[in-house]
Image (cartoon, rainbow, N blue to C red; front, side):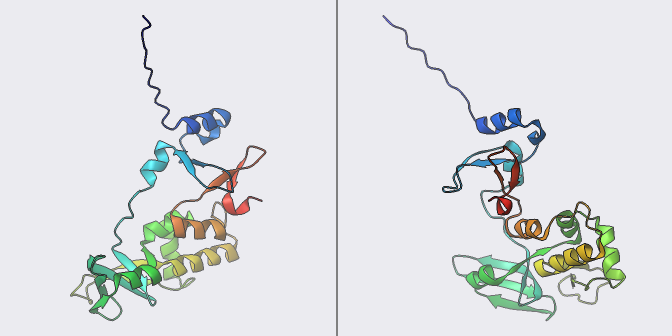
Length: 207
């Protein structure tokens, strides 16, 4: 009588491990591995990528619409409505959820802007206070617009303008390219593809 053996192999993130053996510089980095250019199917991703990514879109708190910063007070996708506070107009407004999702710009704190531009937030604040870049809009405690407490909130356009200023003044060391920054703003990540030579390059640089 033959005895049956069942072996279970946990090959979770197997292809990531293979790529790291081939290229040790990938160790510790967030990786997503897919198929050919003709068929972009994700086969596996590293644990770092899972930590930094999210399968469910996070609820947004601040957003820009028609060039104005808003804060979500209440939202319902099922009822297709968002009640928000419009800071420049100092009032509550009601929008269609689908309209906001289609036309909004994401909002970023000065810390977020620093991470995206690879600059310290103090440096960005100095650019603003010295008048080198346009002052972004501010948020304040709702119900008290004259409060001494407020903070800057940046739109995607604001961040791109600051990026252009940095490039124009020559302080571009370790600053992402415009294409990389736009990818970060759109996806919150940069996707790389492996060339025939075995190098990883951003997808927009691949031939």
